[in-house]
Image 1 (cartoon, rainbow, N blue to C red):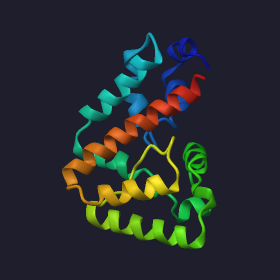
Image 2: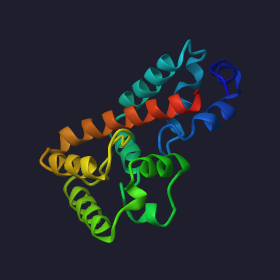
Image 3: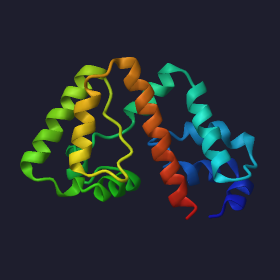
Image 4: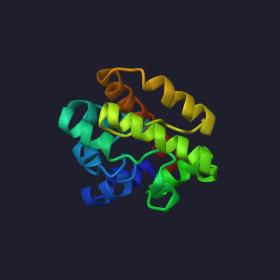
Length: 167
């Protein structure tokens, strides 16, 4: 699909085409469908990020919580979206040793306990070691910092996914 086709699509088709950009959150493309046409993917991305930023804390936390744990059980069981599966595989999270899986499990639990939502990182360009390092560093943040960082990471993930969609 091209951006021109997306701009001309019905709202239903527009939302369906962009449904995987923000994890399990079709409300994001729904919020921007009426803003069409978009001149380029940068404008589309900016509009969706603005919709998230304007959505309020409850919706933002829902978006954050819609993301899977990195290197978690859902990944091992094949229960992720196609996008998340590809991203985690690209970072090598599908090839964790049992000890590494246990470490990710421990870090995921510690993060979830501290902040009440999953650790989110745009994993492109990362490997399991840099992801673990980011986990450890961000466990020292406060809740406000982590909400901001999670939303920043989600925006980056969305940018990567849009680039893939229109590549």
